[in-house]
Length: 131
Image 1: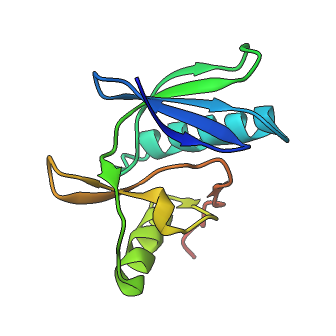
Image 2 (image 1 turned 60 degrees about the horizontal axis):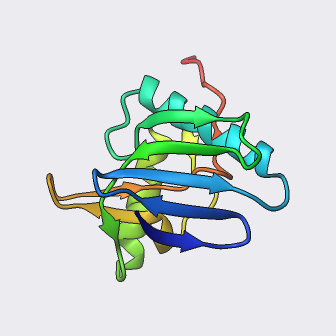
């Protein structure tokens, strides 16, 4: 497995079969884990096609961890307008990312799609009822 991220909050490994392993540590690790699991399940239920799919969730581990599908490679450059469009599109699926930085954008070559990752701090928006 290849380590792709190692910070105070999380370590991320990419397996050779394309799965992503994210282990949470540091302050509020369990809370951040639970939020990301909740958000990824919500986005899957709403049919969002440009986020990872949650394959496994392990809250019982000393350091909680998830396993997801891979959403492509890191994006090094992206103009501000396009970055904003991608994060705004997520809100159509009822979620605000709350960390709209380029480090949370990937590119999936299989279909030429920009994707979003890292939902530790995301917010599920309240449903609005038509008037």
